[in-house]
Amino acid sequence: MRQLTTHGGGGSTPNWSPDGQKIAFGSYRSGNVDIWVMDAVGGNQRKLTTHNAEDFTPSWSPDGQKIAFRSDRSGNPDIWVMDADGGNKRQLTMFVGFDSQPSWSPDGRKIAFQSYRSGNWDIWVIDTDGRNKHQLTTHEDHDADPSWSPDGQKIAFGSYRSGNGDIWVMDTDGQNKHQLTTHEAYDSDPSWSPDGRKIAFISSRSGNMNIFVMDADGRNKQQLTTHEKWDEYSSWSPDGQEIVFASDRSGSNDIWVLDLRGIVQVGTPITSRERAATLIPPVKLRTTVLNTAVVEFQEKGSLGIKDAGAIVAEWMSSSLHKTQVFDIYERVLLYKILEEQDLGLTGALDEQTTAEIGKLYGVEAIVTGTVSKFGNTISVVAKLIDTETAKVIASSDVKTTSVDEIPGAMDELARELAKEP
Image 1 (cartoon, rainbow, N blue to C red):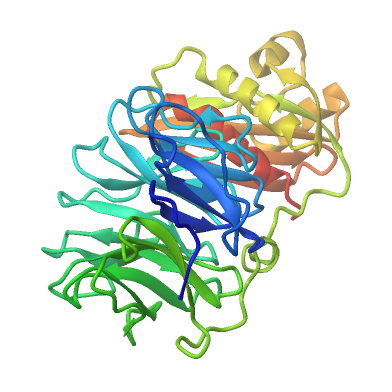
Image 2 (tube, helix red, strand yellow):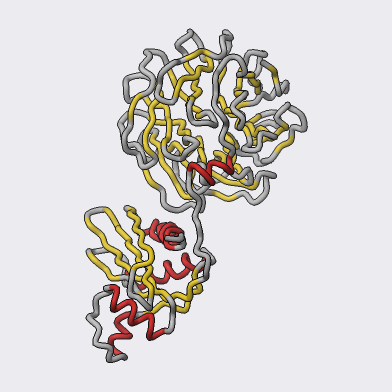
């Protein structure tokens, strides 16, 4: 055990950088809570935020280039993102309420967080560009403190749904929730080990808050700290050999590190870059840049936006262009073609019709699709069709509940279409 900070202004919510070299944390030593960073051994402590609002709960991106955090600088607590040196701060959520506890997905594309926007604490997820907000938990009791598993398949969280605070886990789409701890004491703040085989958490089962660890399936619980003061907010080192945490055992809130060697058996750690390269297959982009056109999408159902097919096609064109895999010729108006050309086409966006349109415009591939609304769900389906063979090269679909989230959904579709088959 060793103490990293000794300032009277305290320290809390530490988070280890993916390269193991730095620790970000919150501290009120400057008069209000700001985000600070220090070397992993405690030296070179410096402030990253200087706003008179409260900045709290830093979370490093998997590549170590960004830090997400909670700030009330916009008038209420929201999720913000900044560069790792404190530059380029931008607001990610804009809710008149309370958003907090950001946790990055291992591929760096999404951030899970807790929010009070549904009337109690629930777990939400959002793309890192601020689009595609999705609510993952909807229970009447509080769900909070999300932590993404290293393989990107699970999210652990603390919940009161069992009558007291316990650790739960679910799939990243909110399905298959199950309880990992069942103690009558308070368990919360889960943190996955880098190899994905352990979960650290805080618990009051020993009489006050201490750090515990268990297997990822909830078995073999083990107490790591035993101090009479509170220990909380644990974060694993990337090599799995240490845990950093906040504690008031020195008389004020400070950052401490516990060496786990000889205490906890951990497997070979998975580095941040390896997570994206092995456990989560990266986007293998196409080896050639396809000369492509986009046909307006067919509409089904009442969407609530005028000319939804044309609007979605325009968004799709922009998203495809950003992948740097598609050279977008232009957005094509299907019905204008049918009026001006005697092609004997059906008017439906089947593969053969789409291929003929592609030939007319001299492109190698063409994107078509549908945008539909059934109940509260908006579904966008996109297909990439080879102009020469009229065969589908790739296809993808996304679902959302808000028209405002469709632009972000287009980015997701574009990434899928950009992959090699």
